[in-house]
Image (cartoon, rainbow, N blue to C red; front, top):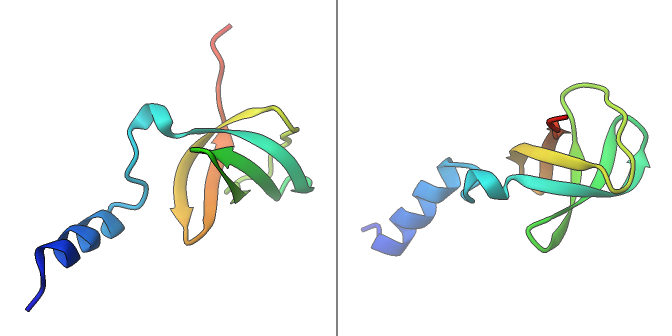
Length: 82
């Protein structure tokens, strides 16, 4: 029989990222492979990150976390209003 805790864990696992939308931002802390792999500070932790597109990001750039694949975040540049 499945316990309530297991059901809750399964539900949130299916949802991918579970934080609120305003918490889906991070900051590039290191460029590992230009245009392909970065280290991102997100929710008080450091993550490896990739993008679906080839983009240029530098340390200090803000990014939006759009998904997660295991321990790798999928990111895109954070568009700023000017």
